[in-house]
Amino acid sequence: MKALQYHIPLELDKSFIIFKEEGPFFPCPWHYHSEYELVLVNKSTGVRQVGDHIGYFM
Image (cartoon, rainbow, N blue to C red; front, side, top):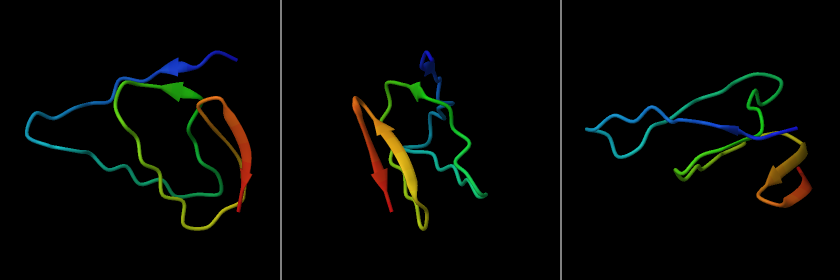
């Protein structure tokens, strides 16, 4: 599988943008972009891949 390049829609008058996802899974394909991304997961378990690390989380 090849990673997708995401283009984050930037607004000139904003320092950051917020996305809220709700549901039984995280609907985000493997991707990369030049911006920083912070992800908060309130309650879940599974496998995550960040950079070259793959691991379980609870």
